Length: 471
Image 1 (tube, helix red, strand yellow):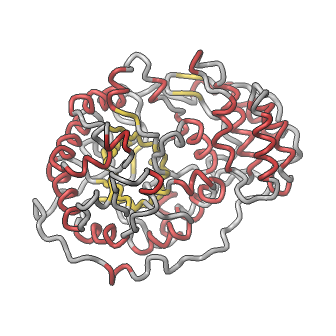
Image 2 (tube, helix red, strand yellow):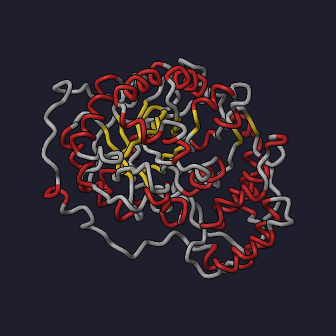
Image 3 (tube, helix red, strand yellow):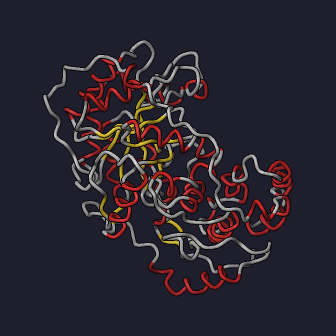
């Protein structure tokens, strides 16, 4: 891979130079192992417009240039979704968050999100959780925690905390970075968060506070706000108690979007990893919420590992779906299907060679531009390590990566030394269809639904629309 003109770095982050045709159907397959003349030409031609790739962050109180589609139930088939997507694209709006990648500590950093956006144009991306106190106390160094490339839109900032003043101040500071939504973490079971930190999943014990917190967050930003939570915590895990939590937060704040991890959290005795596996999934709680809170939007999270499962849940009526580990552990096969199979739109790139060409430009351009806090090659390579999941040459490539990272200084040199382990047939192959089919994954859900929740604080919650700043 040859040397490229580096993207321009601005306060909002560093630009990613995508491949020709990346706004639509993607280009053809890559050529040999050397540099692609077509890509090199595109990189040179884009140098003249680099300065305009990243608009400056919006000032607090202003609105992003692109608007979002109103909240609505997703059309059941790819055909209607394709029409919806094309209409939104013509009008300069982001597509609805039918699919999103979950916030994951130490995983969904800027580098992973860059890779994810190169693979999928329309998936909604979430940051790692940023603690409110970190934002408040690092206000002179906010770029380190909040800056991101403009190409990562649509993107959601997840914050954590249990102090109203700090949550309000942190949101006000983050608002200048033009995130598309602000999300409060009410689901993390980690001892550092829910234990010593007294936030995360522990906040579900106090829905009054969460309602106040969401009001404070909404009052200090001009984008929608949301809550990510579990279906319960410890022995407070009945459907009635989950509804009381949602009802209280909705009645006390403009929140009209909840991301529901369909497992309860156990704060004592289980690690965060075990909390993702041991408590049983209760998807029926999620689908019952759709029935009992018709004016609130819910995203389904937990245990979903294939695109077929994503589409099966949407056909069953799910508003939106969030995927976590599967999108990190196998990004090509998970994210590579999102644009075409969830949104009915063309895929961004046709091969992993193209992904790596663009990611190399991003990686080598930012090394050295952040001073002492610059990313090193190992940090940049980390999101790539699962790109060839289960493919021929994957094991050899990872072994070569381990040895090469001990001495290489650039992402370009790393890729040149290691990619010989991957056959051209893998590097240049288009995204393939996963052979598994899970049409009936949620088919029996109606028979499992718990009794209706009938104690709404208000007989009807005001329906919100994503384009309004009050949500």
